[in-house]
Every structure is written in C-alpha cells, then in structure tokens.
Amino acid sequence: MELTEKAAYIKGLLDGLELDPKDKQTKVLKALVDLVNDMAEEVSQLEQSYDDVCDQIDAIDEDLSGVEDMLYEEYDEDESCDCGYCSNGSDEEMTYEVVCPTCGTTIGLSEDSLNDGGIECPNCGEELEFDYDEDELDDAEDDEE
Image (cartoon, rainbow, N blue to C red; front, side, top):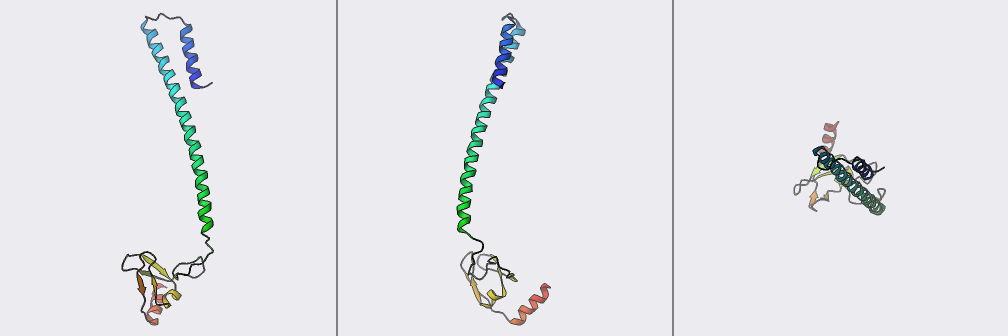
C-alpha cells in the first residue's frame, strides 16, 4: 500500500468514527489527517521526480559512454609521437627537465632530445635551444645518483 492510500485509509477511519465536527479534538484530528494526506502526496511527487531524474542520468551516462568510446578510439596510446619530448609509452626514460622561460612549463627530455639541440615548447611554441657540454651532463647524472 502506498502512502497516499494509507493516508486515505486513515481519513476513512476518522470519518467512520462519526465524531462531533464542532469538538476541538475532532478538529485537531482532521487537521492531522489533512497534514498526513498532504505529506503523502508531496512524497509521491518527490518519488516521481526522483525516478525521472534517475532516468535522465542513465540516458546521459549512456550518451557520455558513447562519446568516450568515440574519443578513445581516435587516440591510441600505442601511436608514437614524433615531437621528441613525449614518452610515447616507450621504455625511454625522461632523464632531464627544462623549464620554458616564456610560460614556465616544465618539459621532460630524454638524452636524445637534448642532443638534437632544441625543441619547441608544447605549451607556448617558444623555440628552446640547448647549449651544453658533455661533462656537464655527466656531472648532472652523477648528482642524481
């Protein structure tokens, strides 16, 4: 039995008592029964709204899942990037970090990327050039250990 049905049942019980409508206690009981009836209707409306929202969320979730599938199909992690500073999912370890003086982005570099002499900042496009001495690299590696 739903709440609205239970409220109607209680109202029927009260009406069946054939109480004096002018009595103060009867007025209080009728007011309470009306309150219970109003609350039962409000709860029923809230339950219906809740069910509608759940249905909408399920539909959005399905749509989002479709969008995710489309996006992730386009991006395959096994594809390699030729930019020289991405890890590409490879075993090559990033051993150096540089900070772009223009935008402040920290960029991880492999020794091969460093040997190329420069890269373009992936954030702002600034051309970064590297001028170093082999001894400096060896000292930096020793300091890390």
